[in-house]
Amino acid sequence: MPDFPNESQPERRNWVWLGFQLVVRLIVALWLRYRARGHDRITHRGGMLLIINHQSFLDPLLVGLPLHRPVSFLARENLFRVPFIGWVLRNTYVLPINRESAGTGALREMIARLKAGFWVGIFPEGTRSADGKLGEMKPGFLALLRRADVPVCPVGIAGADRALGRYHKLPHFSTVRVVFGEPISAAQVAETLTLGEAALLDLIRTRLEECMGQACAWRDHK
Image (cartoon, rainbow, N blue to C red; front, side, top):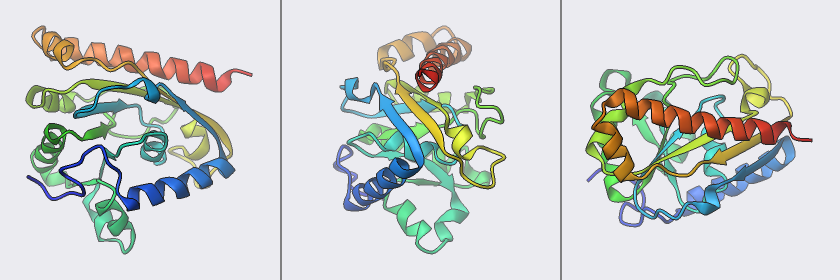
């Protein structure tokens, strides 16, 4: 079993996660008009894969902020060597990813955490969107679903690209909305996979686009 905090209690946040969550909440309150919904309707208590559109470096923080349990994300391995940042990453359930071993080491770690009952968050576009819209979803993450019997929760973000987007050098004030969709059950994931990976990718993309549409409408509502 890989070495990560609270591996026997995947639903419990450690003190580093709780403290960081509090600091982020204060920063967001001063900077962003941020709200999230749908997370309170998720009743699944085991491992789950969160599929999220990618608009900003802020996205992992925006997704984890309203949750009462930790989420494991991926970060470049070199960030773990940066003083303090590396310590925070290691103690907030973040997984290091190396370009050379991204298809093996990181994959094994994510599968282990999913099977241990953790929530794992990934951005299937692989890079931040240039215009806030959902780009091409790379199918590599489907390997996780073939090897871990877990549901998939789509999470749509709107407005993060306006706050600190791909081409922003400085942060901007913005309205940000995050919508957690109804999870796709593990049974439905397995059933759809029998039709082929393209069918499952289409299903997940459709659900994610629905969440993004709701988040955009909510953001723009006056």
